[in-house]
Length: 104
Image (cartoon, rainbow, N blue to C red; front, side, top):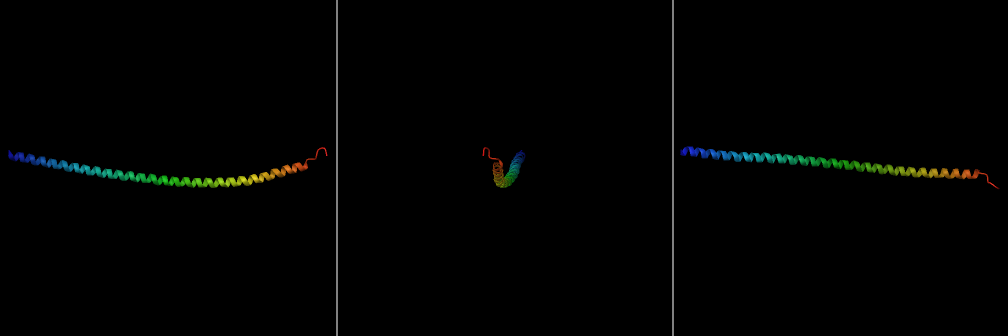
């Protein structure tokens, strides 16, 4: 009977040890999974940050190109307005010079 009790106690001790190792193994697996999850989140965050930086750089390039086009268009319009003003003045002056004086 003592032998049976000793065997049961030994079996219970081995079972408790097995359960403890099983808990430790599960904890290690969960820790690795969490580490991989954190690494994946960091990689995703880094990729998003890089994409955002590239997009911002493209936006800045586009803004600079638009500003350059705007300045070019303004300069062109200014030159064209000066040219048109000269044409209008010349046309008005020529028309005034060609109109006979009434009552002279």
